[in-house]
Image (cartoon, rainbow over all chains, first blue to last red; front, top):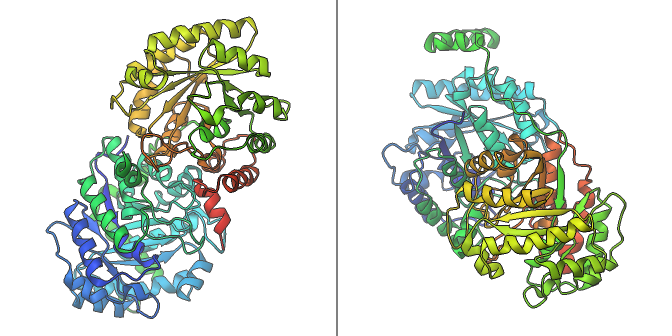
Length: 298
Length: 336
């Protein structure tokens, strides 16, 4: 049976914009987040407290955090790769954070310059500080069904990393198909392994649409009891491993499917599309959402 | 807990979990009843690019390009390739060269090349040109039928009866299509019973297979499930196919739903050729490449070589001067 409600975690302002070439002015980022807040989304990932050297798009992290109009009942998590980032986030007013692990050793080395185990140890510091500050932490696992360097990823490895993050204290673990290679086949196998170690109510899926498989993968995840889905308004954010190809799945398309299934999301699709139209105009790009493309032209 | 080894910390956290969530233990011991799906072992892909795809492309494609497209598709392992449409060239100029296409293609053994035949005239022309399989197109929506083929559903059924009768005489198999199966651009909502009625009629008249078309791509797994549940009562599941449009990005989850319900025939178009005439600029047919990627990833056999289809897609997109709609092709072409 499918869940009655699905919580959508909107990652456009962070994961989306981070992977867009055009640097977006702070004001536009704030406006985007405010519009998303109005659309009924319960969780909006606002920014990333990573060094601006690495991710110039997120250099205005503090201004964004301080500038947004926080809607009551909506969470605005931010990425914190280490303790320093965590402290900066909290001073800027963040009340929820997220940490990123990988299921692939090579990916971890190439992306954050250390092994998976080393990265988890770094996060322990963040976890400790977060516990003391009563700040909830969300854990991400990337490369859950494929890695740009290692190729296939063993479901058991994903389960292991997910379990570690969960037992460290992350309240939710988002499983990311970083390069979008997953299919209902590999998703099922991976979820079977992970659900043995982490309760399904604490799991989320973060599917990329690089091979057009995202919605099918999300449907399979829902059928297996998952009720939290990450997506990005207008499908913002390309794929850094397949230039020009798409990355995040579009929130509009996910919401369309969920509503068609009679599943509640609390999201107003037309307000969401307004936010999508705004950000696409701002960065001068065409939306990656098929729903947005279709609806505009009827 | 600074001096405690990680492994011990790990166990202590687990204990904490069990304390805080008392259901956890029983959850571990309970047998998880995750819905396990039985998927077909093999899915037949019906390639509609050369007909449904090109028909909805603005650029008129030269005959030799059409022929080359079909010949390339014939080498990919596809077993059914819809070649053209014997409809009046007044209505569909893109298909004016139908006879030349049928005569010009290199027929590969074990590959079938159905053609659309809207009426007896079209059927006779098709047979004269050498067609050995035909298809007829019904609609679940009265308004769509009237606007599209200028007659009511029941009038169209009479026309099709003529075609099917003539086809039977020549032992030519006939495939039936039902358009607007999940929604109509004019009427909006379409009830599954409307679709079932038309599907049943076509099947009883003698069509060996009925393809249910989500003409404007508005369907979702929710409406697809309800549709198939109803139609399955009137037409055996083995005689059903789904023809999903990707206008709202729902094609693959809709196809997945159909597979879960036992459907094992899927229509698609190479490179996702063919836009949507009701949502200008939007996509129409689902890409064969993307469907194959999903099916193969699920361990479902198709007999089709994905790389060859991608190659064919590249060819026709170059010829049309347009970008592919297939995400798989886009990703493969750009992977660093």
